Amino acid sequence: MTADTIGVGLVSVGWMGRLHSRAYRALPDHFPELGVRPRLVVAADPVPEARDQAVTRLGYERAVADFHEVLDDPAVDVVSICSPNFLHREMAVAAAAAGKPFWIEKPMGRYASDSRAIHDAVERAGLVTSVGFNYRHAPAIQRARELVRSGRLGRITNVRGSLLADYSSDPDAPLTWRFERERAGSGVLGDLLSHGLDLAQYLVGRIASVTALGETFIDTRPRPGQGIVDRTAAATGERGAVENEDYAALLFRFEDGAVGTMDSSRVMRGPHAEYTLEVYGTTGSVRWDFQRLNELQVALDGQEVDGYVTHFVAPGDGHFARFQPGAGTAMGYDDLKTIEAAQFVASVLRGEQLAPSVADGLAAASIVEAAEASLADGAWHDVARVDGRVTTGAAAPVL
Image 1 (cartoon, rainbow, N blue to C red):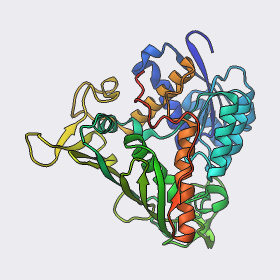
Image 2: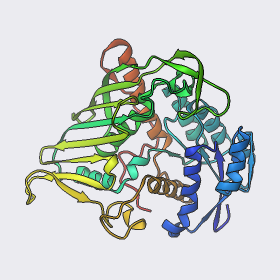
Image 3: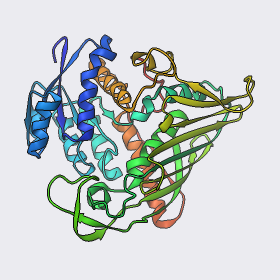
Image 4: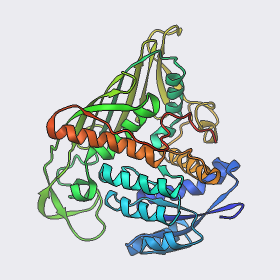
């Protein structure tokens, strides 16, 4: 790292790897006060076409097949880990051992045991990190958090969330790694519900206990052919078993006594990315839907209009002003990743955990672990407490 440059290494050049790369490139424009220009040094991917894309499309100086070459490069100051779930533990633990701060996508590991190993390796190394809980950074969520944490909603009584998607609704879509316990861990619990559970804790507080139910509605899928296998790949051959859940629903209790419900599906017909969160208190409530990213429904005692008022996010809400000049002009998903990149880079430059941490990743994984135990026996389970730099209860970072 120089006075004005920070070297970036990327592991896995898929959709999320491309998104991380664009987010780094956008930092000088949207967060000039960071004072550094990201240098895209090296990307790793075992697929030759992906390596070529890293150089010709994304602008990396070189591309390699082995991720260890990224970690060993002295010009790499920070690493983005965007690989499939089953590779996260090996790569993140190796990054920590190499002393490289990393930004990793969620779920952080296949199981809570993977996430604990990553968390413990980071704590031993004393690194700052970032986990891809990007929905936190929506300006509407920042405004909702201010209303909750300032007491404007009164005593919080209950939370409702729903994360409904259709990305696996085609029963003839291929049996990718996402449907295998060994390589994905859980299904929608880790893939989608971990986002909603992180948001609930970010707004309200720690979830202490949970009970759950789950179901696999499409129990077999055709085995894929050769080549790059993702959810859009052509499927051929015999059908294999789906080993994790298509749908899950949770009841949970917060540490302070509030209660919550949340469900998620990857096979819904109709919703594409209907991710909602509602927080209810004794003097008001807020509602947010990711599909209406730049709006927050607000009801407060004493407001002029009875019922919900639509608050269109505007300068003064989170980092909205860095992207748009006024309410009604929308931010997008990629912008949330740019904010995430800025928090990560700022954390590294200051040596202070500003971004969602591996402790936050472990906290979400611990709720999933308790929910999976409940799927097995139908009982309530306590959520393991996480020691470390959990940022859900901290003040929202100001860069």
